[in-house]
Image (cartoon, rainbow, N blue to C red; front, side, top):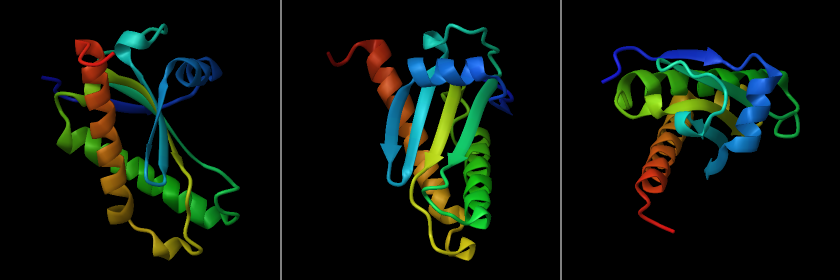
Length: 139
C-alpha cells in the first residue's frame, strides 16, 4: 500500500511529448485524458509521484475566468481522487493530462460536484483498462 502520493505538474517538454506519444486516450463525458502508466514510461519514474497537466482550450470558451475555474476544479477533483478513493491503484499512473472540452457560459454555472464524478469515473476506467491489458484478458 502506498502511504502518500505526491502530485506534481508537468514541467518539461520532454515529459509532455512522452505522454502524448506513448500514452493512451480516454474520454468520459466532456473530459478527455491521456494516461501513461509506469510500465509504459521510458523516462525515469519516482514511485510516489504522479505528474499531471490540466488544459482548457480557448476554443472551448473565450472567457479566461471560465477556463481558469474549470482548471481549478479539475486540479481539486484529481487531488480528491488521488488522496481518498484509490490509495492502492492510482500509483500505477505516472503521467496524466486532463483536457476539458465543454464549458458553460458563466463560471458560476460549473462546480466541483459537476467535475469530480467525471474525473473519478475516468480514473476508474483507466485503471480497469490497464488491468485488463496487463492481465491479457482481451486481445
